[in-house]
Length: 178
Length: 178
DNA sequence: ATCGACATGTAATTTGTTACATGATTAA
DNA sequence: TTAATCATGTAACAAATTACATGTCGAT
Image 1: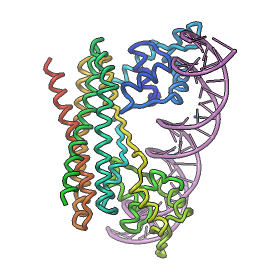
Image 2: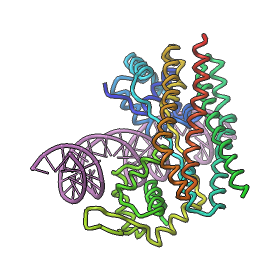
Image 3: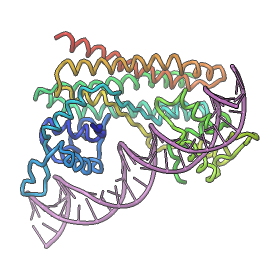
Image 4: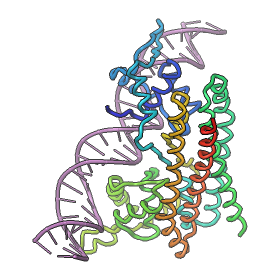
Protein backbone atom coordinates (compact mmCIF):
# COMPACT_ATOMS: atom_id res chain seq x y z
CA UNK A 1 0.00 0.00 0.00
CA UNK A 2 2.56 2.54 -1.14
CA UNK A 3 1.06 5.98 -0.65
CA UNK A 4 0.24 8.28 -3.53
CA UNK A 5 2.59 11.01 -4.62
CA UNK A 6 1.21 14.56 -4.53
CA UNK A 7 0.89 14.58 -8.29
CA UNK A 8 -0.81 11.19 -8.33
CA UNK A 9 -3.51 12.54 -6.02
CA UNK A 10 -4.54 15.28 -8.37
CA UNK A 11 -4.25 13.17 -11.48
CA UNK A 12 -6.51 10.45 -10.13
CA UNK A 13 -9.00 13.01 -8.86
CA UNK A 14 -9.33 14.82 -12.16
CA UNK A 15 -9.54 11.55 -14.07
CA UNK A 16 -12.39 10.50 -11.84
CA UNK A 17 -14.40 13.53 -12.89
CA UNK A 18 -13.83 12.48 -16.50
CA UNK A 19 -11.14 10.80 -18.61
CA UNK A 20 -8.42 13.15 -19.78
CA UNK A 21 -4.99 13.42 -21.33
CA UNK A 22 -1.98 14.66 -19.39
CA UNK A 23 -2.34 17.94 -21.22
CA UNK A 24 -5.92 18.28 -20.04
CA UNK A 25 -4.95 17.53 -16.45
CA UNK A 26 -2.47 20.37 -16.61
CA UNK A 27 -5.09 22.74 -18.04
CA UNK A 28 -7.54 21.78 -15.29
CA UNK A 29 -4.95 22.38 -12.60
CA UNK A 30 -4.14 25.76 -14.10
CA UNK A 31 -7.70 27.06 -13.83
CA UNK A 32 -8.58 25.56 -10.48
CA UNK A 33 -6.14 24.07 -7.96
CA UNK A 34 -2.92 25.82 -8.97
CA UNK A 35 -3.00 28.07 -5.95
CA UNK A 36 -2.90 25.28 -3.38
CA UNK A 37 -1.89 22.22 -5.38
CA UNK A 38 0.18 22.71 -8.52
CA UNK A 39 1.45 20.19 -11.04
CA UNK A 40 3.62 20.73 -14.09
CA UNK A 41 4.01 18.74 -17.31
CA UNK A 42 7.36 17.55 -16.05
CA UNK A 43 5.61 15.74 -13.23
CA UNK A 44 2.35 14.79 -14.86
CA UNK A 45 3.60 12.79 -17.83
CA UNK A 46 6.05 10.57 -15.95
CA UNK A 47 3.51 10.08 -13.15
CA UNK A 48 0.85 8.94 -15.63
CA UNK A 49 3.23 6.25 -16.84
CA UNK A 50 3.87 5.13 -13.29
CA UNK A 51 0.18 5.03 -12.52
CA UNK A 52 -0.42 2.98 -15.67
CA UNK A 53 2.37 0.62 -14.62
CA UNK A 54 0.75 0.31 -11.20
CA UNK A 55 -2.61 -0.46 -12.82
CA UNK A 56 -4.42 2.57 -11.42
CA UNK A 57 -5.10 4.18 -14.79
CA UNK A 58 -5.38 2.88 -18.33
CA UNK A 59 -5.39 4.31 -21.84
CA UNK A 60 -8.88 5.00 -23.05
CA UNK A 61 -8.01 6.08 -26.54
CA UNK A 62 -5.10 7.02 -28.62
CA UNK A 63 -7.76 8.46 -30.90
CA UNK A 64 -5.84 7.68 -34.07
CA UNK A 65 -4.03 10.91 -33.38
CA UNK A 66 -1.25 11.49 -30.97
CA UNK A 67 -3.43 12.08 -27.95
CA UNK A 68 -3.28 9.75 -25.00
CA UNK A 69 -6.48 9.85 -22.99
CA UNK A 70 -6.47 8.01 -19.67
CA UNK A 71 -9.24 6.78 -17.41
CA UNK A 72 -9.29 5.27 -13.94
CA UNK A 73 -9.28 1.51 -13.50
CA UNK A 74 -11.30 -0.14 -10.74
CA UNK A 75 -8.13 -0.30 -8.66
CA UNK A 76 -7.59 3.40 -9.32
CA UNK A 77 -11.09 4.21 -8.08
CA UNK A 78 -10.49 2.27 -4.89
CA UNK A 79 -7.13 3.91 -4.27
CA UNK A 80 -8.61 7.35 -4.77
CA UNK A 81 -11.47 6.57 -2.45
CA UNK A 82 -9.06 5.45 0.24
CA UNK A 83 -7.15 8.68 -0.01
CA UNK A 84 -10.30 10.81 0.22
CA UNK A 85 -11.11 9.12 3.53
CA UNK A 86 -7.77 8.38 5.04
CA UNK A 87 -6.61 9.48 8.45
CA UNK A 88 -3.04 10.48 7.79
CA UNK A 89 -1.99 14.01 8.57
CA UNK A 90 -2.62 16.43 5.76
CA UNK A 91 0.26 18.11 4.08
CA UNK A 92 0.21 21.80 4.88
CA UNK A 93 2.95 24.05 3.61
CA UNK A 94 3.10 27.79 3.67
CA UNK A 95 6.14 29.63 2.34
CA UNK A 96 6.06 33.40 2.12
CA UNK A 97 9.11 35.46 1.30
CA UNK A 98 7.32 38.74 1.93
CA UNK A 99 6.50 37.57 5.43
CA UNK A 100 10.12 36.54 5.96
CA UNK A 101 11.20 40.03 5.04
CA UNK A 102 8.55 41.46 7.31
CA UNK A 103 9.88 39.33 10.16
CA UNK A 104 13.35 40.82 9.66
CA UNK A 105 12.22 44.36 8.88
CA UNK A 106 13.86 45.67 12.06
CA UNK A 107 17.11 45.25 10.11
CA UNK A 108 16.12 47.82 7.47
CA UNK A 109 14.98 51.39 7.40
CA UNK A 110 11.27 52.15 7.85
CA UNK A 111 10.78 53.05 4.19
CA UNK A 112 11.96 49.66 2.98
CA UNK A 113 9.78 47.93 5.57
CA UNK A 114 6.74 49.93 4.50
CA UNK A 115 7.41 49.26 0.83
CA UNK A 116 7.57 45.56 1.55
CA UNK A 117 4.21 45.60 3.32
CA UNK A 118 2.70 47.55 0.47
CA UNK A 119 3.88 45.00 -2.04
CA UNK A 120 2.54 42.16 0.05
CA UNK A 121 -0.87 43.78 0.13
CA UNK A 122 -0.86 44.55 -3.57
CA UNK A 123 0.04 40.98 -4.40
CA UNK A 124 -2.95 39.72 -2.41
CA UNK A 125 -5.29 42.12 -4.14
CA UNK A 126 -4.02 41.11 -7.55
CA UNK A 127 -4.29 37.42 -6.70
CA UNK A 128 -7.87 37.86 -5.50
CA UNK A 129 -8.74 39.76 -8.70
CA UNK A 130 -7.17 36.97 -10.73
CA UNK A 131 -9.24 34.39 -8.88
CA UNK A 132 -12.45 36.22 -9.65
CA UNK A 133 -11.58 36.78 -13.30
CA UNK A 134 -9.95 33.49 -14.24
CA UNK A 135 -10.99 30.85 -11.77
CA UNK A 136 -14.46 31.78 -10.65
CA UNK A 137 -16.04 31.24 -14.09
CA UNK A 138 -14.83 27.66 -14.07
CA UNK A 139 -15.99 27.12 -10.50
CA UNK A 140 -19.41 28.48 -11.39
CA UNK A 141 -19.56 26.18 -14.38
CA UNK A 142 -18.87 23.31 -12.02
CA UNK A 143 -21.78 24.40 -9.85
CA UNK A 144 -24.06 24.15 -12.90
CA UNK A 145 -22.84 20.60 -13.35
CA UNK A 146 -23.68 19.76 -9.76
CA UNK A 147 -20.19 20.04 -8.29
CA UNK A 148 -20.42 22.42 -5.38
CA UNK A 149 -17.04 22.05 -3.72
CA UNK A 150 -14.71 23.68 -6.24
CA UNK A 151 -16.56 26.92 -5.68
CA UNK A 152 -16.18 26.50 -1.92
CA UNK A 153 -12.45 25.95 -2.28
CA UNK A 154 -12.30 29.18 -4.27
CA UNK A 155 -14.16 31.04 -1.55
CA UNK A 156 -11.73 29.68 1.02
CA UNK A 157 -8.84 31.11 -0.97
CA UNK A 158 -10.53 34.46 -1.36
CA UNK A 159 -11.29 34.69 2.36
CA UNK A 160 -7.67 33.94 3.17
CA UNK A 161 -6.28 36.49 0.74
CA UNK A 162 -8.68 39.16 1.87
CA UNK A 163 -7.98 38.61 5.55
CA UNK A 164 -4.30 39.00 4.81
CA UNK A 165 -4.81 42.10 2.65
CA UNK A 166 -6.93 43.75 5.33
CA UNK A 167 -4.36 43.13 8.05
CA UNK A 168 -1.56 44.37 5.82
CA UNK A 169 -3.49 47.54 5.00
CA UNK A 170 -3.85 48.22 8.72
CA UNK A 171 -0.14 47.73 9.28
CA UNK A 172 0.54 50.07 6.36
CA UNK A 173 -1.50 52.73 8.12
CA UNK A 174 0.37 52.18 11.34
CA UNK A 175 3.76 52.41 9.65
CA UNK A 176 2.77 55.51 7.70
CA UNK A 177 1.37 57.34 10.72
CA UNK A 178 4.79 58.14 12.14
CA UNK B 1 25.55 38.32 -8.41
CA UNK B 2 24.22 34.82 -7.92
CA UNK B 3 21.04 35.05 -5.90
CA UNK B 4 20.73 33.64 -2.40
CA UNK B 5 19.22 30.24 -1.77
CA UNK B 6 16.16 30.17 0.50
CA UNK B 7 18.23 28.77 3.33
CA UNK B 8 20.97 31.37 2.83
CA UNK B 9 18.40 34.12 3.32
CA UNK B 10 17.38 32.96 6.74
CA UNK B 11 20.92 32.12 7.84
CA UNK B 12 22.25 35.55 6.95
CA UNK B 13 19.29 37.24 8.60
CA UNK B 14 19.65 35.42 11.89
CA UNK B 15 23.41 35.93 11.90
CA UNK B 16 22.86 39.64 11.48
CA UNK B 17 20.84 39.76 14.69
CA UNK B 18 23.77 38.09 16.41
CA UNK B 19 26.51 35.52 15.64
CA UNK B 20 25.37 31.93 15.96
CA UNK B 21 26.21 28.32 15.24
CA UNK B 22 24.27 26.24 12.74
CA UNK B 23 22.58 24.57 15.66
CA UNK B 24 21.43 27.93 17.00
CA UNK B 25 20.07 28.96 13.62
CA UNK B 26 17.96 25.83 13.60
CA UNK B 27 16.66 26.54 17.12
CA UNK B 28 15.79 30.09 16.15
CA UNK B 29 13.91 28.93 13.08
CA UNK B 30 12.01 26.40 15.16
CA UNK B 31 10.59 29.00 17.54
CA UNK B 32 9.90 31.73 15.03
CA UNK B 33 9.84 31.37 11.25
CA UNK B 34 9.16 27.63 10.92
CA UNK B 35 5.57 28.22 9.85
CA UNK B 36 6.43 30.28 6.78
CA UNK B 37 10.16 29.65 6.26
CA UNK B 38 11.62 26.38 7.49
CA UNK B 39 15.19 25.11 7.41
CA UNK B 40 16.57 21.77 8.56
CA UNK B 41 20.06 20.75 9.73
CA UNK B 42 20.51 18.95 6.44
CA UNK B 43 20.31 22.29 4.65
CA UNK B 44 21.85 24.60 7.20
CA UNK B 45 25.24 22.97 7.71
CA UNK B 46 26.16 22.58 4.03
CA UNK B 47 24.84 26.06 3.30
CA UNK B 48 27.02 27.59 6.02
CA UNK B 49 30.06 26.05 4.35
CA UNK B 50 29.01 27.46 1.01
CA UNK B 51 28.46 30.91 2.50
CA UNK B 52 31.87 30.76 4.12
CA UNK B 53 33.40 29.75 0.79
CA UNK B 54 31.64 32.69 -0.83
CA UNK B 55 32.99 35.05 1.84
CA UNK B 56 29.59 36.07 3.22
CA UNK B 57 30.13 34.58 6.67
CA UNK B 58 33.20 33.71 8.73
CA UNK B 59 33.98 31.67 11.80
CA UNK B 60 33.91 33.79 14.93
CA UNK B 61 35.02 31.15 17.34
CA UNK B 62 35.57 27.47 17.54
CA UNK B 63 35.53 28.14 21.28
CA UNK B 64 37.99 25.40 22.09
CA UNK B 65 35.03 23.06 22.03
CA UNK B 66 33.34 21.62 19.05
CA UNK B 67 31.07 24.60 18.42
CA UNK B 68 31.37 26.61 15.26
CA UNK B 69 30.00 30.10 15.68
CA UNK B 70 29.65 32.21 12.54
CA UNK B 71 29.23 35.91 11.98
CA UNK B 72 28.52 38.03 8.90
CA UNK B 73 31.37 39.55 6.93
CA UNK B 74 31.07 43.02 5.43
CA UNK B 75 30.21 41.38 2.10
CA UNK B 76 27.55 39.33 3.89
CA UNK B 77 25.99 42.47 5.35
CA UNK B 78 25.82 44.05 1.93
CA UNK B 79 24.31 40.97 0.32
CA UNK B 80 21.68 40.74 3.03
CA UNK B 81 20.87 44.40 2.67
CA UNK B 82 20.41 43.99 -1.06
CA UNK B 83 17.98 41.17 -0.54
CA UNK B 84 15.92 43.10 2.01
CA UNK B 85 15.41 45.84 -0.59
CA UNK B 86 15.35 43.98 -3.85
CA UNK B 87 12.58 44.15 -6.39
CA UNK B 88 12.33 40.55 -7.49
CA UNK B 89 9.04 38.78 -7.08
CA UNK B 90 8.60 37.20 -3.69
CA UNK B 91 8.29 33.48 -3.40
CA UNK B 92 4.78 32.58 -2.29
CA UNK B 93 3.82 28.96 -1.94
CA UNK B 94 0.70 27.54 -0.42
CA UNK B 95 0.10 23.79 -0.39
CA UNK B 96 -2.89 22.42 1.46
CA UNK B 97 -3.97 18.81 1.22
CA UNK B 98 -7.13 19.40 3.23
CA UNK B 99 -8.16 22.04 0.73
CA UNK B 100 -7.42 19.66 -2.13
CA UNK B 101 -9.73 17.12 -0.56
CA UNK B 102 -12.33 19.81 -0.04
CA UNK B 103 -12.10 20.70 -3.71
CA UNK B 104 -12.85 17.10 -4.66
CA UNK B 105 -15.40 16.43 -1.94
CA UNK B 106 -18.17 16.00 -4.49
CA UNK B 107 -16.56 12.63 -5.16
CA UNK B 108 -17.22 11.35 -1.62
CA UNK B 109 -20.19 10.98 0.64
CA UNK B 110 -21.28 13.98 2.76
CA UNK B 111 -19.98 12.45 5.99
CA UNK B 112 -16.43 12.14 4.68
CA UNK B 113 -16.59 15.69 3.34
CA UNK B 114 -17.82 17.02 6.70
CA UNK B 115 -15.16 15.09 8.58
CA UNK B 116 -12.49 16.60 6.35
CA UNK B 117 -13.72 20.13 7.03
CA UNK B 118 -13.82 19.44 10.74
CA UNK B 119 -10.22 18.25 10.71
CA UNK B 120 -9.14 21.28 8.73
CA UNK B 121 -10.70 23.56 11.31
CA UNK B 122 -9.24 21.66 14.24
CA UNK B 123 -5.78 21.81 12.74
CA UNK B 124 -6.04 25.61 12.48
CA UNK B 125 -7.16 25.90 16.05
CA UNK B 126 -4.34 23.72 17.29
CA UNK B 127 -1.80 25.62 15.22
CA UNK B 128 -3.04 28.95 16.61
CA UNK B 129 -2.85 27.59 20.16
CA UNK B 130 0.69 26.39 19.48
CA UNK B 131 1.65 29.83 18.19
CA UNK B 132 0.42 31.49 21.36
CA UNK B 133 2.05 28.96 23.66
CA UNK B 134 5.39 28.36 21.95
CA UNK B 135 6.10 31.26 19.63
CA UNK B 136 4.52 34.29 21.22
CA UNK B 137 6.81 34.26 24.29
CA UNK B 138 9.83 34.55 22.01
CA UNK B 139 8.19 37.26 19.92
CA UNK B 140 7.37 39.23 23.07
CA UNK B 141 10.95 38.85 24.24
CA UNK B 142 12.04 40.35 20.92
CA UNK B 143 9.75 43.31 21.53
CA UNK B 144 11.54 43.95 24.83
CA UNK B 145 14.79 44.00 22.89
CA UNK B 146 13.41 46.58 20.48
CA UNK B 147 12.56 44.23 17.61
CA UNK B 148 8.94 44.86 16.75
CA UNK B 149 8.50 42.93 13.54
CA UNK B 150 8.71 39.31 14.71
CA UNK B 151 5.61 39.92 16.79
CA UNK B 152 3.86 41.41 13.77
CA UNK B 153 4.73 38.38 11.69
CA UNK B 154 3.19 36.24 14.41
CA UNK B 155 0.02 38.31 14.38
CA UNK B 156 -0.17 37.92 10.61
CA UNK B 157 -0.07 34.14 11.00
CA UNK B 158 -2.72 34.18 13.71
CA UNK B 159 -5.03 36.37 11.63
CA UNK B 160 -4.68 34.00 8.69
CA UNK B 161 -5.34 30.87 10.74
CA UNK B 162 -8.31 32.41 12.48
CA UNK B 163 -9.89 33.65 9.26
CA UNK B 164 -9.58 30.14 7.88
CA UNK B 165 -10.96 28.53 11.04
CA UNK B 166 -13.94 30.86 11.07
CA UNK B 167 -14.81 30.16 7.47
CA UNK B 168 -14.44 26.42 7.99
CA UNK B 169 -16.69 26.53 11.05
CA UNK B 170 -19.37 28.23 8.96
CA UNK B 171 -19.08 25.58 6.26
CA UNK B 172 -19.33 22.91 8.94
CA UNK B 173 -22.61 24.42 10.04
CA UNK B 174 -23.87 24.50 6.49
CA UNK B 175 -22.93 20.88 5.84
CA UNK B 176 -24.44 19.74 9.13
CA UNK B 177 -27.71 21.60 8.62
CA UNK B 178 -28.99 19.14 6.05
C1' DA C 1 4.01 24.56 -47.59
C1' DT C 2 4.29 26.68 -43.40
C1' DC C 3 3.03 28.73 -39.08
C1' DG C 4 1.04 28.51 -34.61
C1' DA C 5 -1.29 25.99 -31.27
C1' DC C 6 -1.74 21.48 -29.41
C1' DA C 7 0.57 17.65 -27.15
C1' DT C 8 4.00 14.53 -25.26
C1' DG C 9 8.07 13.73 -23.36
C1' DT C 10 13.21 13.97 -21.12
C1' DA C 11 17.12 16.04 -18.66
C1' DA C 12 19.23 19.11 -15.58
C1' DT C 13 18.96 21.46 -11.60
C1' DT C 14 17.23 23.00 -7.18
C1' DT C 15 15.19 22.29 -2.97
C1' DG C 16 13.82 19.86 0.91
C1' DT C 17 13.13 15.97 4.39
C1' DT C 18 14.66 12.05 6.76
C1' DA C 19 17.58 8.77 8.52
C1' DC C 20 21.85 7.82 9.90
C1' DA C 21 26.62 8.32 11.96
C1' DT C 22 29.57 10.43 15.06
C1' DG C 23 31.61 13.03 18.67
C1' DA C 24 31.58 16.41 22.88
C1' DT C 25 29.71 18.08 27.19
C1' DT C 26 27.14 17.96 31.35
C1' DA C 27 24.49 16.17 35.14
C1' DA C 28 23.19 12.19 37.84
C1' DT D 1 30.64 6.06 34.22
C1' DT D 2 26.81 6.35 31.88
C1' DA D 3 22.92 8.47 29.97
C1' DA D 4 20.97 12.57 27.97
C1' DT D 5 21.57 16.44 25.44
C1' DC D 6 24.20 19.31 22.56
C1' DA D 7 26.26 19.69 18.07
C1' DT D 8 28.00 18.71 13.48
C1' DG D 9 27.81 16.43 9.54
C1' DT D 10 26.60 13.02 5.26
C1' DA D 11 23.72 10.16 2.26
C1' DA D 12 19.59 8.74 0.22
C1' DC D 13 15.58 9.98 -1.38
C1' DA D 14 11.48 12.74 -2.88
C1' DA D 15 9.47 16.54 -5.19
C1' DA D 16 9.24 20.38 -8.28
C1' DT D 17 10.55 23.76 -11.82
C1' DT D 18 12.58 24.84 -16.02
C1' DA D 19 14.44 24.36 -20.34
C1' DC D 20 14.75 21.74 -24.06
C1' DA D 21 13.46 18.45 -27.87
C1' DT D 22 10.16 16.55 -30.72
C1' DG D 23 6.12 15.63 -33.13
C1' DT D 24 0.93 16.44 -34.79
C1' DC D 25 -2.85 19.02 -36.49
C1' DG D 26 -5.50 22.63 -38.60
C1' DA D 27 -5.85 26.90 -40.96
C1' DT D 28 -4.09 29.91 -44.37
